[in-house]
Amino acid sequence: MSENSSTTLPGTVERIIKPLSGDEPEKAQIAINGGDHLYREIRIENTLTDENGDHVRLKQGAEVEVTVEAPPEATTPAPKTEKSEGIEVGDKKSLTVANSSARTGMAR
Image 1 (cartoon, rainbow, N blue to C red):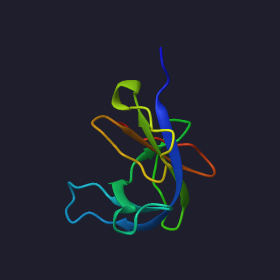
Image 2 (cartoon, helix red, strand yellow):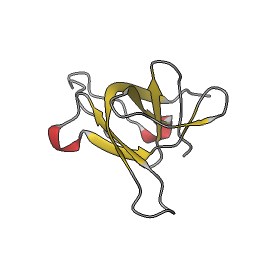
Image 3 (cartoon, helix red, strand yellow):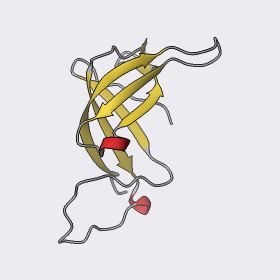
């Protein structure tokens, strides 16, 4: 069985976005360092799970890591002369966000 390909980039939680209504989740906006200017922010549901299985939330200003992971069937070999500067994301990917104290993940 092959292992998934992945890349991890540093990021910062820029802001916490409160829901407009009670049935919507709180969001965390994360700026990914090294991303293209117009595309470096992502917003995720601000519900994570710590190593003990407890639900936790990100804090504004937190330094995090954003991991993009892809199964072998979703990737192709990069040309040997190509310089890797960006991330292409296909159909089924996972996102893991971690801070310096505990590794946390999101359900797909």
